[in-house]
Length: 387
Image 1 (tube, one colour):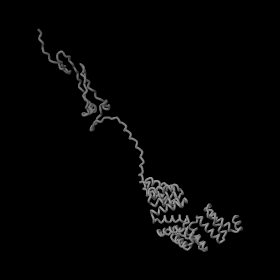
Image 2: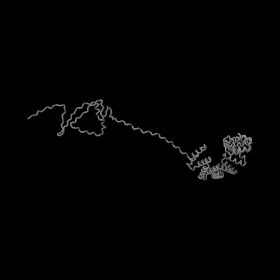
Image 3: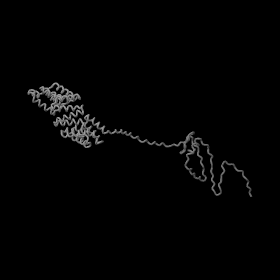
């Protein structure tokens, strides 16, 4: 029988082997002592952030038997750490390298929109009538009619617009349209004098004397103190050669309106026909005193002076009238009559030539030229025709 002598264990630099339980395979791992890494490599091995790891931990597969754990070797100091490790510097937090993304371009600035000017406040019918009257004074006839039309579009029964447009139509000799407007006035205001007065004026301009006289009668029925209606009815009586009735209307008109220049001139005409020259001269003088530009008063007083044989006063009045209205052909015809009366043939012919240039179709011019030809001596007629 052999006796086993205990042996002294041998010291070895190798690590002791570990055995697993019976029936299991023993796994031996040979561990190598890692060498000391440089500080830069240690920093490279740090995790990116302790707070950024929000993803679940990765499952590490079990190592096969006899697996050897390889300890990473130190990296050169100038080597870049492998991705996705982030290089950290002392005193700074780790920074991720975010790819640069181009900023979205700003939308184009829209072109400035033009700010609409505030619309002017529409004019009232009265303002439109006032504008029409101003346009009429400036002889802007169509513009004036347009303004009256706008006023009536706002207020179809507006009396001042109907009256103004009827008057303008009459002055433009558009009598049918004037009658329409005056007829509207009578229809809208049957007991007002305005419509009858306007229609009477239009009928008188058309030569419808009896009808005009009836309209003025109606106007005076609704307004007995209407001086203009009295004056116009007096003119109708004069045209119908009803001289006493005409004189009565003129007297009443001047009583109601003593400053009416036309009234004195109209009454003076009746007084001449009634062979009352002194009264006629007084009325002409009153008209000229009221209105120094009363050309009709100067003209008719000058002719009355000529009839009375006062040539100097007649010539003075005719010269004064021509000074005030040098474009009025009637005045040259009247002065030609004076020269013919004085047998100043050459001067009379010159006056008629001046009137011819101003109004070649004038009926008084034609009549005066015929009278001059009848009275002028033959040798003056020959020289006049030769010139």
